Amino acid sequence: MALHEKYNEQVQFIVVDVQSPQSAQLVQMFKVQYIPAIFFIDSQNRVEEMIVGDTTKDKLESNIKKIID
Image (cartoon, rainbow, N blue to C red; front, side, top):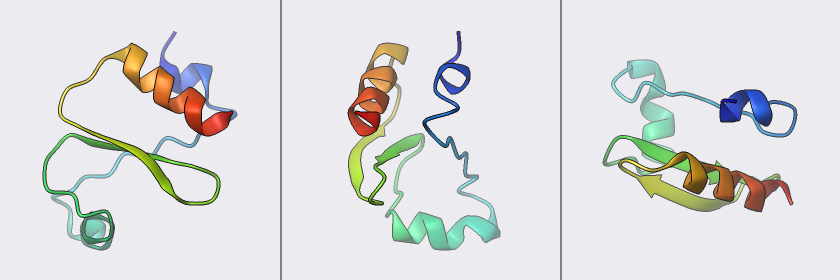
């Protein structure tokens, strides 16, 4: 099962095209320098974790669990 299907009730997944002009403000706000960049943001809008580059499903799920617990 894909993570977005498993956690869709608890987590909002957002994909941003960093090369799109409409995304410039988000890219600047999160200081995205490398892609892929994955941010885990808690319910208080704090970045709890950031992953740059390739990662595993297990690491993604571990970080998701941290922000929903």
